[in-house]
Image (cartoon, rainbow, N blue to C red):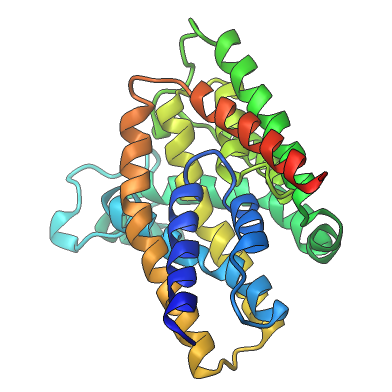
Length: 296
């Protein structure tokens, strides 16, 4: 590969790192960028690359939110009071409760259970329909329409909720029902251009979470979803890579990771003082430009 090809890989990593977390659709942007910046790789490899590159972005979440996500501690850091209200007197449950109190942050274990619970709708719908969705919806027209429609939804939603008081302002107060409903909204992101983060943030706001909690839970929900999606794509492609293919994948992931660090920090800082309407207008403008370009 020549130097131009490597610059293309870096560009794709930058696009992924920015758009994975902002509610503007990473898959949609990658599809659009691929229309103009084509790597000299097989279509099968690029189909896999556009999904697996997201692992780099996901690792940025793990690094930035490690303290909120890692559920284990050493015995010397165990709390003095048991997390369990009703203590078992003997048997398996007594041993299980002792292990949890000695080595686990139970609030973080519960958070992970909520994350897994929220993944169920996407698993039920996404796994059987993955190939069909890719065949019928992975094109510029669908991306453009999804960008416009969800841009309008963001603007309407923010105008409607301008003076609302969030019902859920901490992850601790997010119920399993809330998590599942956010997971239902995540199913909408199977349509490219919709945005996984956009769908789940809209879902979170609609059920009453603050913008910060909607964004954070969206980040956490991405971890199992993207790992699962990447594993499926890798297995479909096969785990044999040429040296060039492996280098392209690694460089794309590293760039996506580095850029994601800044994108996540930017978004979390931005939404403390602003709403999501600017992303809605961006989506609408980009969607119109894309429609006009491909309708020439």
